[in-house]
Image (cartoon, rainbow, N blue to C red; front, side, top):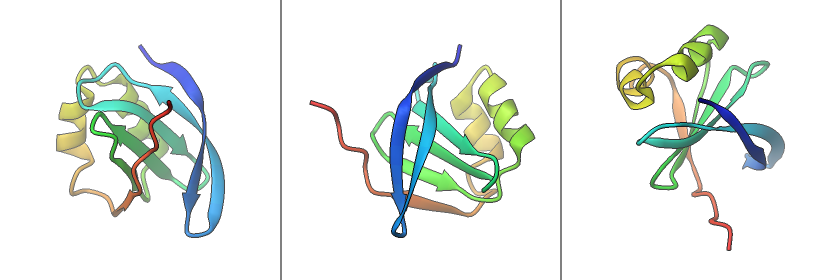
Length: 94
């Protein structure tokens, strides 16, 4: 099940983007966001680490969301397959 979590601000190279984060039912990820115009996938890991993956196809994002195991899908189809950037850790809300 995928639910809308919230709108969060992503700051990257002096540009700000508001992205719609989806809460994920996963032992690896807390949430994901996708910007189709930029073909950019954002993944927030349970550790709090945030990564963005570039040139990520829209259909592959849909496949990721539909996967029974998001962690397994990530390991097989995303990790080491797309250019990526590690972003500063998300601040935890108090």
